[in-house]
Image (tube, rainbow, N blue to C red):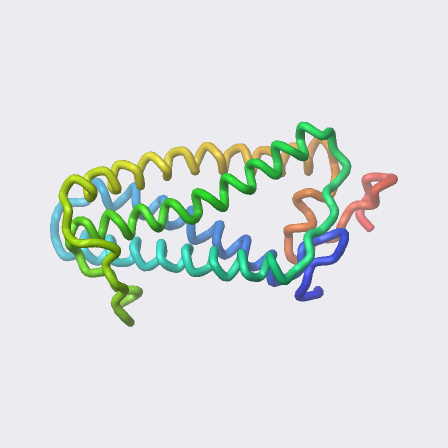
Length: 191
């Protein structure tokens, strides 16, 4: 498979960045839901540290993904009604915005709360601001609300891909799957 995207499918770098980020976001969301109900103690602190490190990784992968997107071509859109194309592009833009806003709101919360921020205990990152309880509370609430909205957007994203795969039977999903064979445009069969 080609590293760069073609007219018909995403290249392997774009695909792997997509799926790596998807796994990190879903896994970190689950970890976030688990950790808020944990009792205080070292285990909870360690889980929080892992959550923060994964969040920073998502932020770094997002930056890498945007840089790669500027260097790589984009496959042609699959044939679909104009409203679906606009909805798909809007959903992607909002996903990118949330993939930026959620880690930054977490970093802001951590900074305003006065906690140190490490990436997998390898190095420290600077605080974005001095300790500030009001901003800390606002950033925590923002971080949580953005997560729940992101879940709704992800349901729309995955749902749209599945509708295209199962009902429209086009290549929308297949062209993002590593090793998947694209369907023939004329017959709907595998080529």
